[in-house]
Image (cartoon, rainbow, N blue to C red; front, side, top):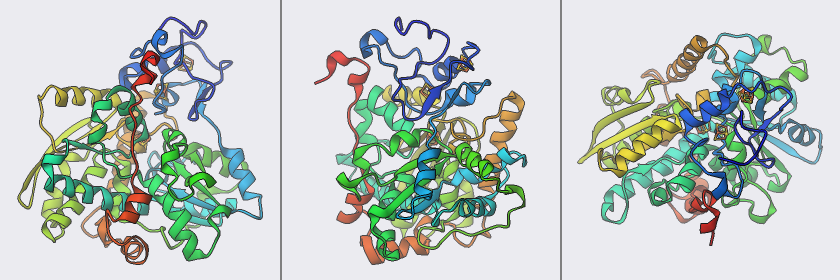
Length: 461
Ligand code: SF4
Ligand code: SF4
Ligand code: SF4
């Protein structure tokens, strides 16, 4: 890295980066962002500006935001775009909240770390003027329905596919794969992320159900993640709107939502609870644990079990999968489903995922299915969540957020399986047909591209 003089102290950020921005007036030149990007993510120090055409490489994970104690690096703000939409009487503003937002938002209002504030979160968004408030947990149920179907299909046609299959719901991991591991693109699940699937469904099925022209809908997602600001701009995700716009119009972070609530003088702590709207407003506890490392894997295994055996996992079988829970970076699990002896892994923190990928490439470990999340502990600790400065508190926060999401998923829970969500069943019956149908493929699946040329522009075709 030899160019970009004057910026030797911090991570390099291109002006058009959709996720992160730096206010150099606040920068204390401490290099903590570089260390996070290099040691935890494996990007800074892993590209050569001479080869990239003097262009900074970034997977948009936001770990540098969390590392910067001086608030110099922040998420790119999309608050004004949301306000414009809310003030436009012609627009119908639909908010969708990702699972982890409800265990981060309360921290911005002095509540304990990881407090579960779903009801107040929905109320506050209604107070801001949203027309509808939907739950991406339902989108997570849909992702699992498609992804588990895809896994079962690949297992049944093992000679045609490369294994392990990798999850693809983390856009930072997807970008890492496209740039650094293009040979693994065939291994990526083609199922879109929950946020992307929900975007396509809001602009089609939901719009039909509530009888609104989708062009009037401004689809706002609240996410714990700044990579989602990049993901929503991927043109291949706009299956519903095509040339007419994005399926997910705007992504704001948990912190941005908190800022809007504060600016509107809403008394968050004393707000009464409110429930989501119907139609993509309710998800299963399997969908809710998507926010934790290992959560996607558990949800997928449960639904794959149903598709393979025709039966739901018993409580004991679910418990047997629990070693894949927890905030450790890398966890393995062997699980028998029908005649399949599956070897799976869940890894969080991109640098740890890179180590696992090297092990897979060197045939040191053989796996069928791998969940990868760029952020340590999963999305609950994403770049868009409230920042925790003190190190001991960071660990407690991770544990609390993780625990409070997982505690919603227990055997007393009425809706524990993604494929049993009545909203998902109605969606397939009324609109999509069945998982992996032609319509489902069109709206809910995507494709990926070899972007290794970004690391060496001389290879650009
Ligand atoms: S967003 Fe992630 S990849 Fe980009 S500079 Fe920050 S830490 Fe590095
Ligand atoms: S962590 Fe923040 S203050 Fe430190 S060098 Fe990076 S941008 Fe500057
Ligand atoms: S782990 Fe979650 S929060 Fe972090 S970059 Fe990936 S999708 Fe975003």
